[in-house]
Length: 268
Image 1: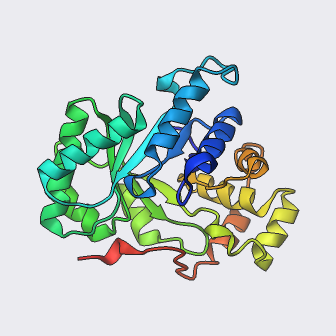
Image 2: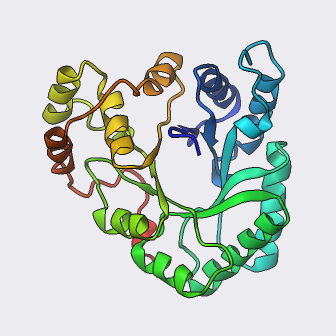
């Protein structure tokens, strides 16, 4: 799985197309969408057009690009199977690389029925890998205790230095569940924080690059969102950066359980 994915939450139309094209041009190989974002078609069609264009100087094919989508609501098995098929059709990509249950909402029965639908979508070749999003420890325990045919490969959660969620991230790491970090840039709310500002100066990088590197050094896969070409390019250029252990600890200590969007991890 690619190490950084472009997030396209709250983007639409030409704005989505531009962001995806610029990201692919800049070397990104993964795009994170969702049914609720209503932009699966724009993302998929832009991937296809990029692959067929002169911009594709590396001769990439569909298998080189990682596309994620997510289920809007956990409901019945038939409804979820139908919904996944619709996402595949909307994207126009032939299959979805990673399909997630977007939240734990709906209750135990709906969660487990939805997961069975994801397992069967994998078996049918519509989805390559299944995972979850916004699952708390109790939801992960419930799913693992149900003896699933396929264990969730990913839990995508909001995680950044201002909301480290160590209880969830450590559980995931103990159970070989990859953590994907959404809102890794804290939705730009903390770019001027004294610690972030001073460390970005120390490492000669942007605050965004510092935050992304923090995520990568924890072993997470960050999903930075931007619709600005220069920032998309900058956000992908973090390989030369290495935050030392003491500075990582300094960033870890910024935790204040800051939630920038929704927070379903304790849902029934």
